[in-house]
Amino acid sequence: MINIDINAPINTETVDCVNLQEKSGKNIYHTICILEKISNKIHSKIKIDLDNKLEQFESINKNNLDEIFENKEQIRISKSYEKLPKPTSLSIQYLLKHKVKLI
Image (cartoon, rainbow, N blue to C red; front, side):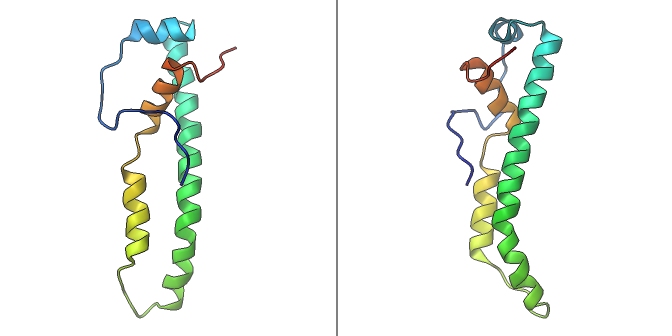
């Protein structure tokens, strides 16, 4: 599983826009653009990691087309990824914790 080394809320939280602007040193528009780019990178890394883990189950399902069965390991992996914080929450926390280098 992808390592998420920052504590981000799973549920939606209100964030102070002024605080985000101060952390980024940019106006709110540029701050949102920065957060979008970070969020997209996080999302793509998580998606690639999940796809790689679920890829092994595709070969099993192709070999057993007639059988429909419940794979507990596949369900466990999917549920663990569903419990991860959203990429937008992670990107905000990265900015607030100064883990993003802005140019």
